[in-house]
Image (tube, rainbow, N blue to C red; front, side, top):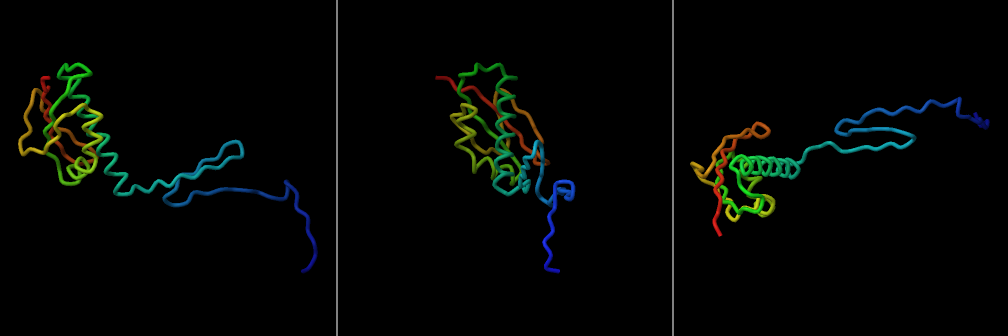
Length: 130
């Protein structure tokens, strides 16, 4: 009612609460909020990263040297196949793959089937000479 009121630290209670789609953390007076929304681009990148992980696992299992060049053949569900297409150059670079191709029945020195985020993929790797 037009009167001036002074509030001190003991008069206030500051609280924070989460916001849907955000992850909020607070420590030592610093608050950080991260948007945890998974976009189609982020999902595709994650699928590509997991595909690289599986190919690297196959390289190791097949006993390839870390410098060996390989050919990769894969057959995947559509969402995973699209992620591989979108990130093909990066996948080839990370795995030293001279070839990264889709195939109805992947073949190679070693072939395995994987599930990545409920998507299915069969991957075959073959060492490329020279």
